Structures are given as C-alpha cells and as structure tokens.
Amino acid sequence: MRPRAPRSSAEPPSIRRPVRWGAVIGSALASFAVVSVSLAGLSSLATGGPQTIVSKRIFPGPRSVPAQDFRDASSGTEANKSDQESYADAVVVQTGTAIASGTNRYLEYTMNSGRPGGLSVSSPVFNFRLASSGGAQSGNACFWFDVRSGGSVIGTHGSYASAAGCSTGTTQTSFSTAIPEVTSTDQVNGLVVRVYPWETGTKTKTVDVDTATVSGSTPYAAFTAYEIQSVDDTSGTPATTPWSLATVDATTYSAASNWPSAAPVTTKYLKPTFEPFVPTGSVVTGATLTNVWRASAAVTNGGTLCYYLETFNGATSLGTHGSAGSPQACTNSGTTFTTDTVSLPEVNTVAKANALVIKLYYWISPLCGGGGNPGCVKSVTDRAQVTFSYYLD
Amino acid sequence: MRLRILTPGATTNKVIATIAVLGAAAAIAGLGTFATFTSSTSTSHTIASGTLSLTSGPVNRLGTGASLIAAGDSMQRAIDLNYAGSVDMGSATLTTSASTSSALDTDTTDGLRLAIDKCSVAWTESGPPYTYTCGGSVSTVLASQPLIGSNVGLSNLTLTAGTTDHLRVTVTLPSTAGNAFQNLSSTVGYTFTGVQRAGTSQ
Image 1 (cartoon, rainbow over the protein chains, first blue to last red):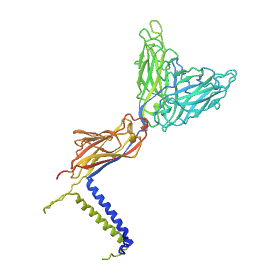
Image 2 (tube, chains in turn yellow, purple):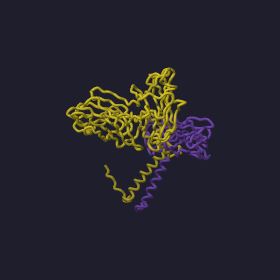
Image 3 (cartoon, each protein chain N blue to C red):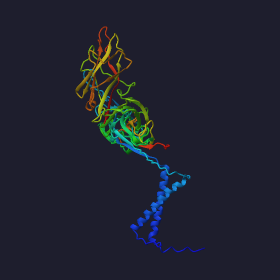
Image 4 (spheres, rainbow over the protein chains, first blue to last red):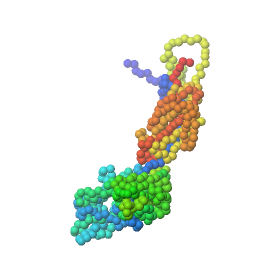
C-alpha cells in the first residue's frame, strides 16, 4: 500500500475550510434549485382581520323565581304567609320529631334556580337560623350539614362532635357558614343542603328552624337562594314539603278569607313579592307572571271568581292588568286550576325587576252570598312565579 | 502554477462565494441531464412568465369584529377577492387562526362556525350591524364548519385572472352554545391562498 502523499505545501490550512464551506453551500443551492423546479407553482395570499369576537357576560334567557314573600290581605289586613324558611322572622318550622345527637336524621333544603347559569360564585355561605323549641329539661339546638349538587355530596361542615353552630335555649340564632365547594351558579341552582340538627336537653326536644338560605355573589350581583322544597326526616320517615307557590303540585295556598262580592276591594288582595337578583346593567326584555289558581269551591248559580292585578316597584304602581270592569281572568271551578300567563311589559328595568311586588285583587262576580247567589269563596293558589328575561352585555 | 497564499477574512469570503456560485451553476446545468437529447434550429422566440396575484378589496369587512354576541347570533362580513395577476388560479384555500383564543374558537361542537357564500355581483351592504343581500345569484363557497381551519378548500370561486369574487363570510355562535360561552373573547385572522392553475401547453 502506497503511503498517502503529503499535502501540498500550496494548500495552506487557511484555505481548506473555505473550500469545504463553499462545497456545502453549493450543494445546498443545487438541491434547492432542483427541488424548486420540481415543485414550483405560483401562489399568492390575501388576508382579512384580525377580527375580535366577544360574547355577552350573561346570555339572554328566561329566569324564573317564585314569590318567597307572600302576604294575604283577603280579610282586609295583611298577614305574612311567606315561606317559613326564607326569612328571619317570627315564622318558624318545628321539626316533626324531637331529635337527639347522633341520629343521622336530617332536614333537607333544595334551593331555587333563578340565577343565570355559568357564572362563578364567590363567598358562598349557608345561612341557618335555629333554636330549641324549649320546654322542660330542654337544652340548646345544634347542627352540622353537608352540601349536595348533582346528587353528590360536595362538602361537609361540622359533625355531631363538632357542631357547625349551636344556639342557646330558645333564642333564635343565625349562623352563616362558608361553603367554598360551591363555585358556580350551576351548582347554586338546585343546590341541596342537608342539615343534621339535634337538641341537647336532658329530655330531647324539637328544634325550630327560622331560616335556611344560601347567599353569595356572582361577578355581577349578590344573590340569595331560597328553598323551594324541604324534607323533614327527623322521624326517620322523610316528609316532603314544597313551598306552595313554587311548583305546580298538590301543595297549594288557600286564601285566609272569602273574597268580596260584586267588586274588588283595594284593601283585599294577595301580594307576592319577587327577588330575582337581576344584575345591575342588565337589559330586561320581558317579565311574565304565572298565576295558577282556582276557587276553593265551585262557584254556582252563574257566578265566577275573578281577579285583576297591579304591579308595583316597591310601593310605586307600575301598571294594572285587567280591572273591576274587565277582569284579568275568571273561573267558577273549585277543582280545576287555571293557568294564567300575564305579560308585564312595564317591568323593563333592573330596578323594577328586583323590587317587583304584585297585588292580585279577587272578587266574586256578579254577587255572592244571599238568596239565589253563589256562596262566597276563597282562592287557592298553586303557583305564583315571575319569569324575567334579561341579558348582560 | 503556484497558488497565492490567501489571507483569511475577505479573501476567504470570496472563495466561499465563488465555489457557491459554481455549485449552483453546476446544479442548474445538471438539470439538463434529465432531458433527452434534442437538436434545435437557430430560430429564437421570447417566453414571458405570467403573474399570480390574490388581493382583497375594495370591500373587506373582515377586520370588523362583533361585540357581545350570544348563542344563536351570527355576523356577516363581506370581502372581495381579486385575481389580479395574469395567470388564472387553479384553487384557493382559507386558513383561519386565533391570536387570542377561547372556547369560542376551540370548541368545535358548540363554538363559532364559519360559512362563506358568493354573490355573482357585489353584495349590497346595510348596517352596521352588517348584513348583505345579493342582487344576482348566490353560491356556496364553504359550507358551515368550525371557525378555525387550515388550508380549507373553497368551492365555486371564479379564479380567473382579472376577475373578482364577492364573498360573504358568516360567523355564527350556535344556539346550542351554553353558559360556558359567556364573557369570552377570540381574535381571528383570515388568510386566503390562491395557487396557480395546472400547467398547460402554450
């Protein structure tokens, strides 16, 4: 084998590297040229945009809330017939059975669904107000609870060993417990809170519940969710009580007194109040009252039970629907409910929606009582609900 | 002959450039090796290449966004595509991309959808909000599909050099879009690409 000849002294090291680089670049250019020729074609671009698309903060849609605050002035004097667990007042619900610690028997509350879905919730709390019903050897009222959404327990607060709250004696006491596991209005709508109460007396007593609500804030408004159904399992057998005005079911509200004859009287009415918590800045596009009602007994001899209604923003009248001479609706049935859907175009702002009060004036036409006239009757209400349609840009 | 000893720096660059040019020339010359042998006369002729140019306008509303849309809303924007070169287009595609993204553009089921149709004459615009009516015939350029797409083929375009297609772009948020689509924002860019027609005998 012949030994490799030494490099010529005419090829100094300083020139070898450029030569190599030149070869590389030349090869690259050659490859590019070949590929370009084989693939080439003309193309051209035209552009549009950028185009920014932003969605509304709250989509348009109907949100329905039943009246939680309900006053009956059929006698001529207003009586508070509001949902018993919605407000801190003298109206309380006593557990069906005396209940001691450790029984795992409960009270369960299902909240209404009047808030727009898809909104984040901050600072959610469960508000519970209770006291011992009292009596000889009674003690205090305590509770713990869990929170349920979609059929699952999403949070537990307290235990029999560590109560979420205890009131002293028969003094009603409010407890607001943070429930951070509730993060969206989708959960708040229809949220279920199961409360395990007990009475600490040496002789176990019942417990009086005044309030069971959930409150919090969305990015746009604070809210309170009221219960529309409660279950009392303190006996070990669940007893379900829907809020009478929230749903169409067998639970109804019967007016306290018979309605007047011949013509409505402005001091005699039913007065539902609505709290939809429409966010400030929303555009209210509609409000509709749904009144499901009938007479407490058949109105005979050609008579009918009639009503018209008046809307208020607080105490300020907004408008009337029907009148003494032209009722909103009439019925003579004591068994079949009439469903009236009444558009309320005058409720067209957030302020009017959030402080909507309605008075329904009933009377028996043409006359009731006395010879040849139908007997005077009460009204029976199965649902009093307003549906608000709105959006927030 | 003796090579001059070159100094590094500028001289080195000259060597690189020289060899690169030689390489390129060799490559181009090499292309001829793929051809069959031919003979030619001394007659000469001139061959001039054409141009391909896709432009937009004078109508181009694609830069106009839409604020505060809700499920079921749609927005219409017109754009003229001009085939301004001397060579016909063979096809055109559309690529859309989001520089600011949200579920509005990423959700291919309930998110924004795009459709394009063409009017045989210029669209008549009203608004804002812009809507368009066609005084001629309407044809579908792109059936409804998710807003974001890459090199999506467009149909029924003229593509002929020197002509214009009058397009109406419709972006819709389906009525099935739920509350998860509230309070979102997306920014979308549109790129139309035209490719020349296939080669023909000339």
